Image 1 (cartoon, rainbow, N blue to C red):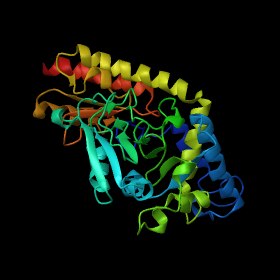
Image 2: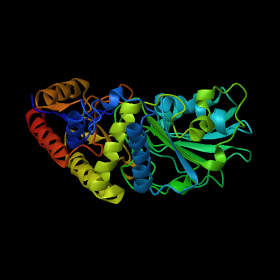
Image 3: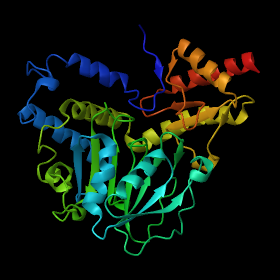
Image 4: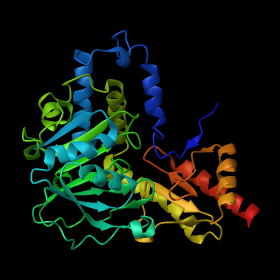
Length: 360
């Protein structure tokens, strides 16, 4: 069977050449006579895999030396608790709620101290990013938290909030490595890798060293302390070894593609194809305010639920998979991450044009 165009929000499409390379190495990784899946995380061969992965990620993102890179388990959602446990020294934190995941992080933080919702776009089903140029940042806030790209709602912070000198914490799960990043603007930047980088099961945390201390909230489990993992170079316990290996291959693929500036340009070209069609279509329309549109996740609707369902069904038959929107928005959503080729977006738009003709 030939491969489909997979528009899933995550776990999502991976670069074909990465999958082929992993397939070739499945039974025998570089003459070791075993798969990376079977290899001790304390072995020389694996030590090189994880160290090279970190070095490549540092190079791609321009991560300063005073930041640690942690490869962790538990997905991004575990960080909703780990962040307040490690960073809430004054037991106060400010949250900007622009979608489901920021909302969940905000709710989780309330267990550990005073979490303040200082801005939100919930009033319009999270279809825009609020103005964050002059927010009521709490004087004693330990950090200001954002989810930078909202997978479900298709919005993206184009300008980082003015945190008035407070540490910025950002969940970048669905825009990870899609464009250049100024890491020094954040105290902590993290994400699950299953959308844009690798298989589910790995979370990457990039954290400024001064934020890593023994001084965590009482009762913080050893495994949720950043210091535990920073001191052990992400090898305190058995890491998600195979997942990290695939992430490393994706980092190398991104370097070959020209790095994050080249990816941003490619992602803008891909997104433009789809957004231009949505803006001119008489059947489909995008659900997000234009200036806040994500390059990664594009939700759209026909305005008729039965027609939406018909579209998703017929698209699937045409080899365009996983286009059903999240239940909170309805309609459709195309996730067009780094590994989605431009041809995939062109195929989607061609199908949408055909569907529009047949159903108007």
